[in-house]
Length: 195
Image (tube, rainbow, N blue to C red; front, side, top):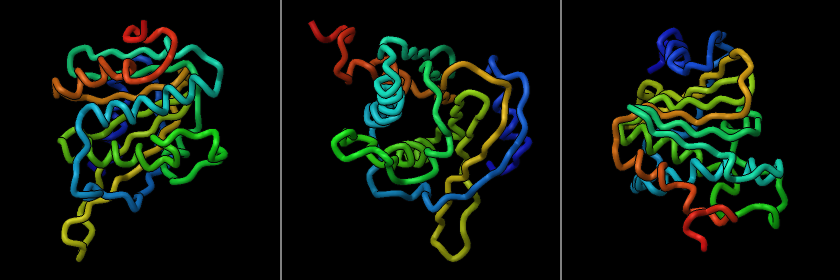
């Protein structure tokens, strides 16, 4: 979907968003043809949640403040910290090698998540932080590339919202279950799997 009006309308399905103004749309070099292997639902949930987990740790917030809901056709992850959504476009990290964990170390995992979600038929993930929103859409086929379709990063200014969100609209039961279980994959004191 490349129609900005249609993409913008997706934001108003989020009850917290009352106003939105398109800032820019940027095609990326990441395509829906990234690697032969599509990640499983569990791998996608794990990597998507890694940013929320790291954000809470970096801001000294309890991991239990991450909230995940899978009501109706929506997966919604909330964490109380805010971050710069522009970082999701780039590959790289300003952290020292000793400060980063293997998963999501340089931002490539998030791009793989966006690419594989599109390959699974889950389009237009919405990311929100403070007064900014980002919707990752799929661009048109690039001529003479055997069907490569780039991910497009669509940035919006919105009314200020506390914290950050990752929102997917899907009826995929396995994906919903993976996100419901998701935080149990992480080591933290209130993990119910740790005695």
